[in-house]
Length: 69
Image (cartoon, rainbow, N blue to C red; front, side, top):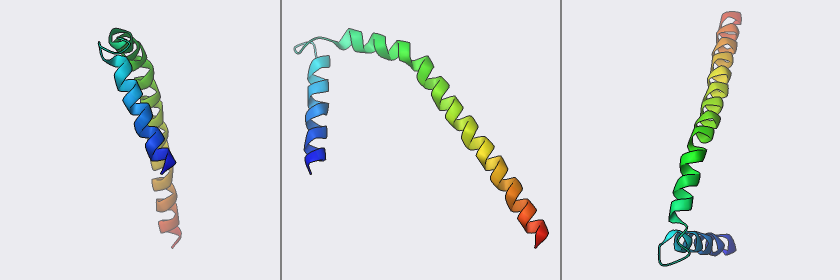
């Protein structure tokens, strides 16, 4: 329950910092997101690559096990 309340408080504070009537960090946040988007895309691509390799290995192991039976 504490984590839920704390999470809501953090989300509300983050939204207030972005609003123009708050701290007005909206443009800074957008600049950060634009700059970090390629890096996030690279990490997602690497994650998908590793998942794909693991899937290929699992299928190969399943075929090998099927042949043995």
